[in-house]
Image 1 (cartoon, rainbow, N blue to C red):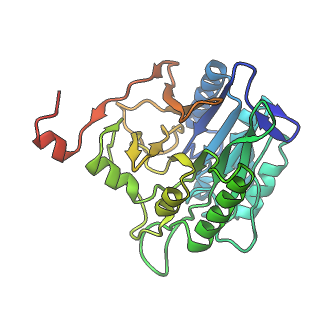
Image 2: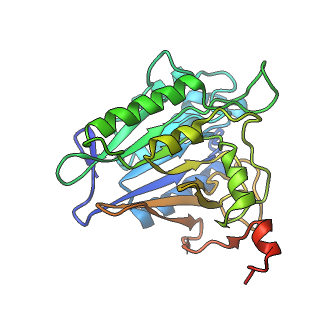
Amino acid sequence: MKSGNSLNYNSDGTFTIVQFTDLHWKNGEAADQRTAQLMQIVLDLEQPDLVFFTGDTIESEYCLDPKQSFHDAISIVSDRRIPWAAVFGNHDAEYRTSKSELLQVQLEHPTCLSEAGPEELHGIGNYTIPILSSEGKAAVILYALDSGDYAAPLLKGYDWIHRDQIEWFARQADAFAEGNGGQPVPSLAFFHIPVPEYEEMWNNETCFGLKEEGVGCPKVNSGFFTAMLEKGNVMGTFTGHDHINDYHGQLHGIRLCYGRATGFNSYGKETMQRGARIIRLNEGAAGFDTWIRLEDGSRIDNQPEHLPEMKRAKGQVV
């Protein structure tokens, strides 16, 4: 729950985050209204303490007024006075608007926790949100990072989290650790475009969930995963971008998680209901719990297990 400008654990020691991703909101068409209904169902059932939009909230190319479309999409959460935050995807500011303009739309909503972040960094929306313990100390840090859009003119394909952003992340991690007796403060990271390690994890580790398309990651590895590993603070990452991937797993002690695509105004698959990923933190406990909530209100706690080829070859398939 929100107390002033801070987020705090509930009296029962829990903190619940709903991840909405890839709404691809346009102009309030029938598909958008179905997206809105899904969001309302999820919010009713989960009663979250925070909502995180992980990019492509709108598809600006098809929006008559992108700023109005963005306002309409986030108002479904904002009107309930639920604290929320957002990072940008590659389609939000692709046409007829800018990230700066869309950030201003966000900041007009009183429960918005998004920030522009340092001006000198790549992107807009690199910031942190602490969740405070019952003693008022930073118990978990949420990192928001702008994963960019396209890599042109350097390369064809998607952008990456840049070196200056990685260095900023490392400085933030060090500063929070210094205030915690030198120990890393457990953290979660939210960004839109998955890092290449999502593909590596699927190929080499046991994962849970579905991979129905390729991982739309950058063609080069900028080293953000390495930085998280070195700092020892990030428990899990949460991305979107690939609408029909929803798997999660663990790579070198970090859980890499896809959200479940929320919006009906873009591509999907009939066998994958739209929905949202839910993240549950428990005060004083390591890690987090996560599940998927679907349009029909049902909850998926146990996603299908995927064994990598190496384990399959050894006959470990049950």
